[in-house]
Length: 142
Image (tube, rainbow, N blue to C red; front, side):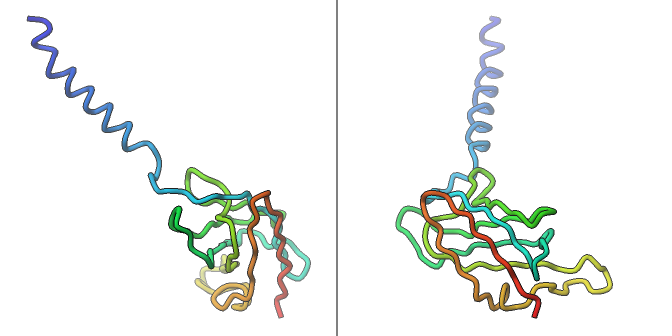
């Protein structure tokens, strides 16, 4: 009698555990070969703080879709790329690099503080190699 009353609860509990385990296993996407990428971004010789650094792959691979990696620069202008919430780094190969920094002034909301040649019309590229990468950017405001 005890077993028959608790059997449905046990089945329900087991099913929930299996479902939750499946949902919490990360993004589930196939991840290409990645390499760590870090560096420092400066503009006119000074650290560029709270700027978004985006590495967009220029090549594709059969192993997995290649997505952009990104980071936000720290107080000293340093950054370290993240591929997704579970993996750091960037996919191997050539990338278009965009650096975006918007004003903090609400009156100038949406104003870009970095010249367009570094973001919307970026001329920056980087080659991510398998053995780790330190890639610095010294931007010029003019």
